[in-house]
Image (cartoon, rainbow, N blue to C red; front, side, top):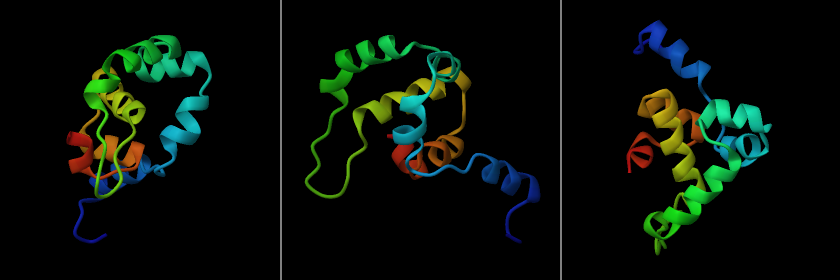
Length: 101
């Protein structure tokens, strides 16, 4: 678009993913790719999720909630790579404000 600097637009487009990135791609990644992406094994991911699930699960009365596994995946990706919120939002399919929560 004309209102975006070209380099920023290209960077955003490069990371554009669908909202099914976590559901379709990440959960079916080979183990070595999963470790490379999140810096933990799938087993450790499951253990962490089991420990923190009660703290991050929200039962929503209005609207959809973000799956606790997806919240953990976003957090681990942020810690592993230092991706900014815009990149994480595009990567995992969500709004920037949802990713920050």
